[in-house]
Image (cartoon, rainbow, N blue to C red):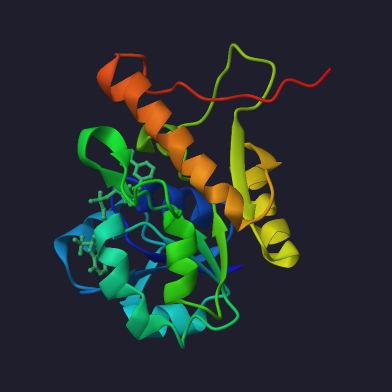
Length: 211
Ligand SMILES: NC(=O)c1ccc[n+]([C@@H]2O[C@H](COP(=O)([O-])OP(=O)(O)OC[C@H]3O[C@@H](n4cnc5c(N)ncnc54)[C@H](OP(=O)(O)O)[C@@H]3O)[C@@H](O)[C@H]2O)c1
């Protein structure tokens, strides 16, 4: 699959790297394709490609968004047309003061994103854990895979993202439509509090136990 990454920092970099190694064609959609951060990632994996934002998005079938949440309002509108019909995977989290929900729990960041790119098919995924789990999600002592909760309104987009989640070693857990994103964003805040404030190890992950 042709995949573009807007944002290739803590979250975007490991996901881009792993997806390329799984055989996908992955392009970093970069503000500056010659930037140091891009060169460092290409040194880690020379099979990645880099291109200017809009060109990369136009070429892609599926686009990951892994920018700081505050950047969405300026990054996405100029790309809205190029995103028409594309799957847009929202990894971003609106975080407010004191680890509160950044939109006052009135609306999810994913729904706000959908408003910025009305013709994109937004799926919220790869958002509920810290980046350490995106670098390495193996749990050798467990006999279940860690779960990746994800949601979105477009069934075909959900299937595509579910396949990527599965390929990356997670158990895909479809939790419903985009209205569920607010709950996922609260799960993220819970994870951040547990790990970053209360000192749980960063490889803390949720699992769905079959019976
Ligand atoms: N960190 C985590 O553990 C974690 C886990 C789950 C979800 N998230 C969410 O994922 C998102 C990214 O977090 P992160 O920790 O990966 O951030 P990060 O390491 O700071 O990386 C941010 C990336 O976004 C790019 N970027 C920033 N502003 C941009 C703009 N205006 N236009 C285009 N690209 C821009 C940066 O590119 P440059 O190199 O050009 O600056 C960089 O590649 C956030 O919304 C965060 O809430 C984070």
